[in-house]
Image 1 (cartoon, rainbow, N blue to C red):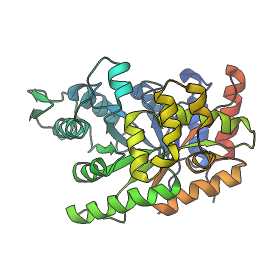
Image 2: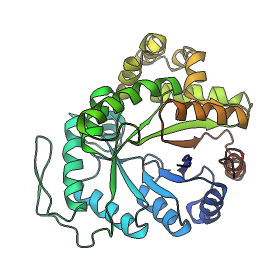
Image 3: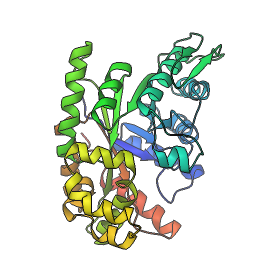
Image 4: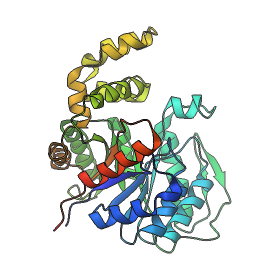
Length: 334
């Protein structure tokens, strides 16, 4: 089986209306997957454009939120994507975080494992042509049935960080989505995935693991400083903080977390360990980046999804930068 090589869409600096050549060129260059990011753009819109402007690539949401969207709305969008890109769409569902659920959308981020489980069950019912009926602990829905079911089965992947959610994802879904971890960290996630897959009768060797990887293929020193800021933005969020404690990085990040909690943003930035930048970001010349990404695959990732980090601020320069990254990290051609 040929290796898969994914891309986060849309690309920075390029308007959605100008993405047709992006999708077509990327697919021609060998990119096999395009995955959206809900915090940046509505996933259905960007992937619907991808469905129209690609012919072979897998299109996936990474993610749609189990707290911020109701299951009927998720099912309607997924069925439409399944109709627009038959056999090529993957629905990624996740809990999000207290930031996206509470601060951005005014909801309550409680019992995420239960919520994701119940939403996946309801959405699976609808996508399988059944009437939605879940009377759970965080969700009570009934009576909804899709009027336009997808022509073929839509796979559901679940975003998972810590062990309990990873194991539950394997039990209830067709694949796992993860991010913000190193190639070496992937081994820990892979071990859990394979152990649980074996327990529930799924093939441990082929169970999909999608991993979004932050990439900046340039030796420009600004890349390290830009990613340093991203570390403080993400790894102080409670779900990611706990994730990295589970991964064994809690002590290394403790000083940064403490300064952030005290309101010392500059101090938190200065306390980001250099090793964390080296491990969690893929930076440097393109060939070094390729080798770093291959380490993720060697550790068990089946779909590496590149997430380009921009250094430019001017929109035109940022668009040019994104196009250059697209070509620089394209999969090796036969």
